[in-house]
Length: 156
Image (tube, rainbow, N blue to C red; front, side, top):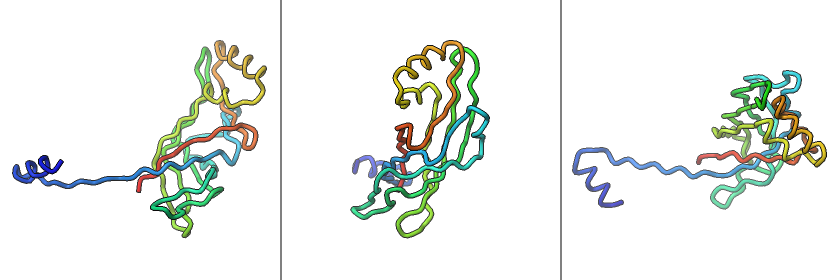
């Protein structure tokens, strides 16, 4: 690495190095997320909350159960023949333990078919899987009922 930097400097190139640390933040929905009746649309602010305390440099940075707002970047209803609904997020906002606004730019994709595995009733899961052959799966995530977690990555 040192030789490469020396070579770049001798060749007249600027030798700027930037390192970013990524911190995992686990979140769960704190409100209904659904495409069943056109409930979720692009630009909507969806409530999530943190699953556990988040630490940065051995200090608590974001507390457990902190509210997190995700902005819907893409929303697509389901269609016919395995065309599943999808909701995408790119930006999340929360507050650190000092009350400062923290913006997390990390993509999260929610696909209707993928959410089936988080439904508790096994018989319903089976019939839902078979039903997706004819009609794509809608998204319906119910807080406290569906055990689904998402990991977003905060760059520091």
